[in-house]
Image 1 (cartoon, rainbow, N blue to C red):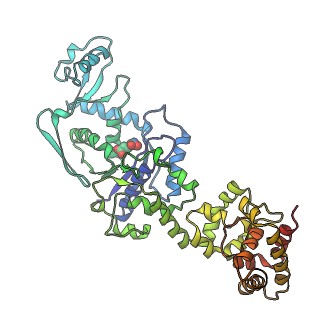
Image 2: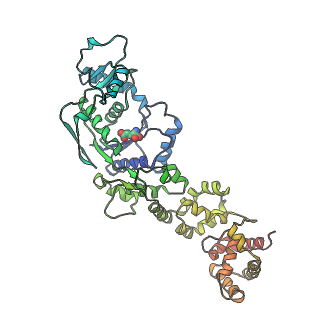
Image 3: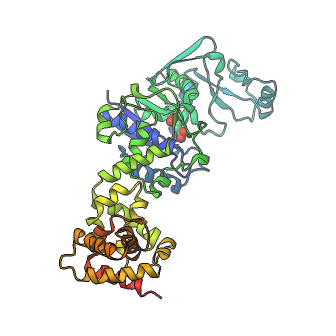
Length: 463
Ligand code: GLU
């Protein structure tokens, strides 16, 4: 049997972290088992459907590098098929027409119970004229149903908890409950892995599968994601949309590692590459209790994957951020400089934003702008020191990290009681316009003698 999993988001306009985890688990399970992973847009509520919302989901999947098989299915487009199944159930006596008026239904609600099944056994000849009926499923009345959930274990519900819910509205459109089942069947879904907020739906969906004589897929209901303080993960805890994490400079592989550990584990392993996960992932490893979102853990993983990442890929991924944050697109020369410093930049960076902010000085040219702290550092005393240093640097034949550092040390010894920081800090301010950067001696070496001297001059002679 080929394993087929699905990701069926409703097009809400963005991809929630919880949805991303659901997609990832389905993708991992399919890919780990040589199966298929399919995507279906649950757009039966046409008011909510728009192309932009669908694109947001596609962008989310693409960013996370979760590839899917076949065409993306639109649930809305299958409506005729859903209605056909409703009519088959009707003909088979598994469903019936109900002519209740809205007032009658309201009356039942007011009495504190659900639909009282009054049309279940009525003769169709009693149908009132001029009323379009809905079609309701015949839910079992006595006994109970147990679902063997791959995560939650055995879950039992008494049949008196189930009602004869509507599968086809009076206007002939299918309800969500029916559409999901028909689509899951038609798409050969073998495993339904989704949030446990859908566990109750599973019992209703099983009624339809059984009534049609279709195989019921394996259900695996994932515990919800909570915020750090408990409580459902929401905006008050921080970013909830996948795209926000992309914008904050997270790498997709870090996000995947983080999300897969939200609810699934393999021993005590924290750092799990996607390749490794494809070997290890199984439904047994999914825990029953809610996972807490831990921003620090995510950041640590991101650091790890930034350090591991191929430098040219990282620069490529960073280019939009250079533009957005600094209005600069590093040219070939600047990219070469950043590349030369990449190992150090990567080991410092928790996010791509930090990588960008700490390397953008390589892409700048004089006159640099100096931030507040750098401006404060470049006082009269420091400028005198920089002027002296400049002469020493200018005299270097080999403009290397070591020689630059030694020149600074000499100046510190002669003028600053040996305090290297008193020379290196102003040098950093002059070369970067900030007070935070990788090793400034190495940075100077990468900038080269001419550019270093130019920047020092610009700092010393600035208005
Ligand atoms: N469209 C549903 C949602 O976005 C998913 C339903 C399902 O997985 O069966 O929550």
